[in-house]
Structures are given as structure tokens and as C-alpha cells.
Length: 522
Image (cartoon, rainbow, N blue to C red; front, side):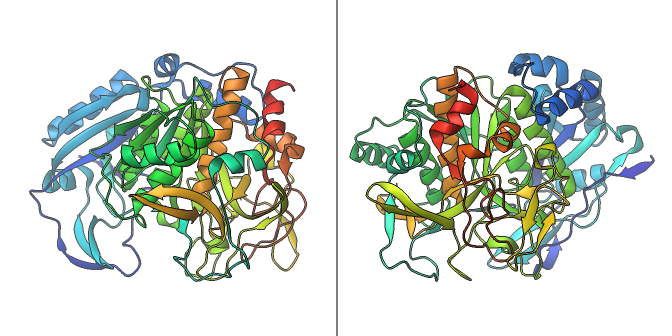
């Protein structure tokens, strides 16, 4: 049987990994197979109009989207035939997500996809990995766009920083704000998110209702409705470690719940793998039960750590979100212009670098007499964190960033050659951080992890006021930069803040009422 390599599926071991032997051939695995979509050209045309700022068509319903742009039944049948040939079980098919879940033993999956799975030692843990390309039967070429789940290395990390956890340049008088105070400082419009659902992607950890009840009671608020949605075996499983993923989960819920207490919050829990991350996103985007109008993502990693098939698959899911009127917000990272990569080059974080994601960078916020006195780029030095930002190595310059320049820390400005990150920003410095409650402990947290839910909650309020989801808002924000507070001081390492868009804070932090006015006509 003729085989062809699956484009973009190349994998290499994690830096510093050591192979310790073959994977157990009898171990049972599950993989996600992503298929091409029906109506490809019509879909591309719709996305192109949105990218150009044309909102005249309005968003599709999830049901209509599935009919027009889901997987072709013939393609699903071809995957079932392939699975049967290799003794694989079809666990579930999701036509609207164009995803078929297959399970089988390591030996069966190795034979089916032409790979060799090895166990690797990395740091204090191990993972199952592969090298080279996935191979497919020639008859599936063009039908299958991605196969994820063979490799189970940790794909992403949280983007929060606990105050006092890292070396830093301390302020003379560190400050902390609860989310309600920040919404006031950023001039958010009066609303509570009623009628909206905000989705949150989590790749570990969990929340406890008792902590949420205590937190919101102390703020004088009714605790929001929070729903845990399991994906690929993920679950709401608090670890009891406030410095671990619980910190991310609780931060996200508490920021959104405090600013948009009338909204329902759906938390999609998935394993921290490329398959888990992709499946959590497609599950949230196409969720016909909870129907989130905004999705907040505070996990990510440098573009260089991803396969191009997975970045392309996730970007495709974000394009689908745009046609459905769903806004995706994502943290831009907490390690400045390097994004934590130690090769001396500049890197940006994915999924924030997708042009269909509102990339959220970080500032340090200074307040006097209940109003903002100054706001600069968050940069606390080598280990104290800095807002992520720079220029993608993968995604082309989107239409709405045409003519934009990135200025480096020496003052040299150059036109963007690829997509620039971030788009917007907000308070992220742990020294001017967020009051939260995690695992029974009150704490102060910073990081761009907090900025994604900060913007998500604003958009929940805006959606309520507009009476429908505003969805893909990049063109409108770039056409109305006066709706944001321009940040012009500071740097995140190799990039400097400047008037207008910059690769540290994007267009700036929100003036919530002005952002709302773009869509309400106020």
C-alpha cells in the first residue's frame, strides 16, 4: 500500500530529552484525526470578508455551520475503513468538528500511521514521543489534515506568576486589585454579562465551589454559574497546589466571574497534550449546549514547540469561531520577547499568535486616587517576568496589520514581515496584581493569564449591551485605536513600546466604554 507523509507532522524530541526505550506495544491510546471541511472555498470567502472588516453577513448558527462546513460523510467513511483495516476502534465521530477519535494499541497505531513510538525522559518526568513524519495511505492524502495524540508530551504551560514566586524588580509599594476595581479603572461599561456564556480552556487543575463561594461573597457578589466540561478524559481535579494549574483555573474563573457575574462560565478540562488542547478548543467552539460567545485561553507555548499541523488545525478552529461570532482571547506569555526559549532569538507564543485570536499582552498599572496615573510595559527583569510579544515566524501579516511597524529596543522600526503580537494588553505585573483565592489561600497573581479573562469579561459585557456576540473584532479595534489606552513606555526585552501599535502591548489597554461604543454605536 502506497504511503505519503502527512504535511506538517514532523516531530523532534524535546530539548534535553533522553530516549529510554520503546513504548509498550500493548498500551491503549486514543488519537484525534482531523478531516478536511466541506465547502472549503465558501468558508474561506466568509473568513476573508470578516478579516476585511465586513460584518454584514452576521454569524452562522452552530447547526448551520455544521451543515455547510462540517466533515463530508464520505471522508468519515474512509477513516472508518482505514481504522477497520488496522484493527482500530472508532471511539466517536464529530462531523461538526471534523474530528474522528480512534483508539488502539501502540503497535496498531504504529502500523497504521507509520511511526515508532518511544519513551523519553525529560526533567523529572517522562513522555511518549516520536520522530519524523506521520505517514498515511495515499488514498487519505488531502482528506486527513492532522493526527494528534500519538505524542503525549506536555504541550503548553500556564501564563500566571504568583507574587513573590520569582526574582523581580519590586515596586516601592506593591499594589493589588480585585477584578471589580480593575473593571472600574479601565472604564468598563455598566453590565454584568447576563445572557452570555464565557468558555475557559484548562489543561489541568481544578476549582472548588467552596473557594469560589468564599471569594465572591467577600466581593459582595453572587457566585456565577460554573460548569465543568470534560474533554478527552480531562476533569475538574484540583491538585491542592496553588502554584500549579489550580492557580490558573481559579484566576480565570474569578476574574471573569467578578466582572461578568451574570454570565455562565463553562470550563473545558482536557489533558495537556496537543490532542487535548485542540479537542478542548473545537469542543468549546462547537458546543451547542453552552454556546460560549467568548473563549479565554491562558495556556500556550512558543511557536517553535508546535508541529505546523497542530498550529494549522487550531488556527482553522479559530477561523471557525470567527464565522460563529465567537471571540477568542489568549495570553501572549510571561517571558518577554524570548517567550522562554533559550536560543537567543525572538519568539512569540501560540495560540496567541493566530491572527484569529485576540492576543493579550501585559502592563504594570499604577493608580492614584482611584484612577490610573501611569501604565507601562510589564517587565520585571530576567526571572520576574515580562509581557510576551514580537513577530510570528509562522503566520502571515493579517490585513488589519498592514503597514504596522515593530520597534526594537534600540529604536529601530521595521514593517511587520509576519503577524505581530499582541493585539491588546492589560494589567499583568504581579507587583500590581490580582487578588484571588486558590485552594483555601488568598494570594496575589499576575501574568498575561489574567489579561485574557480580563478582556473576555469585558467582551461578555459588550455582547450583552449589543444584544448579540461581537465575535471577530480585530479589524474594528485596529480601525479605532482611540478606544484603547496607548502604552508608550517600557520594553519586553528586544521590543519597545511606542505610540500606536507595538510588539509589547499591542494597541494598548482597554477603555471599556469606548470599546463598547465601537459596536453599540455610542
